[in-house]
Image (tube, rainbow, N blue to C red; front, side):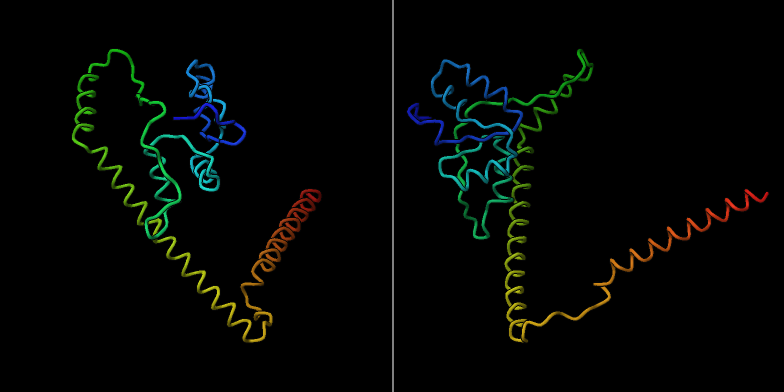
Length: 206
C-alpha cells in the first residue's frame, strides 16, 4: 500500500503509453492511495526502460502486464546465477481483462467460448508461458556467458598488443573494401554518363 505522506518528488512509477487512461482514473479517484499513485506515474516508458529505471533507483517502480514483466525480467535483468536486483510485487494494482472483438451474433461464438474456456482451464496458457520463460532464461544465460568470454578474449588481445609494442595492425584488403566500392560506383556513374552522351549525339546526327 502506498504511503500518502510520500512526496511525488522523490518517488517514480513508470508505465507504458497505454496506461494514460489509468493515470487519469487514478488522478480523479477519491481514494487517496490511488490519487497519489496517479501523481507518481510517468507515462511513455517501454517495459525494459521502466524496469531499468527501477533497477537504478530504489524509489522507483514500473507497472505493466504481469506476464510480460516476468518475461522481460528473466530475459534482460537476470544474472547467470539466477539472481536479480528487481522484485515483482504479488498484489495487482488494477486488473486489465483481455478481450477479442468479434461480430455480433456469430453462429460459432458459443463453440469459440467453449474452446477458449477449455484452453484456460487445462493449463495450456500457463504451460506456454512457463515454456517461454524457460527459453528466455536459457537464452539470457547463454548470451551473458558469451559476453563474458568475449570480454576475457578482449583483455587477452589487449595484453598481447601491449606486449608486442602496441604498433598499428597490418593493412589488409578488408580495410580497402570501402575505397574499392566507391571506386566501382564512380566508374559505373562515369560509364552511364558516357553512354548517355553517345546516345544524345547519335540522336542529333539522325
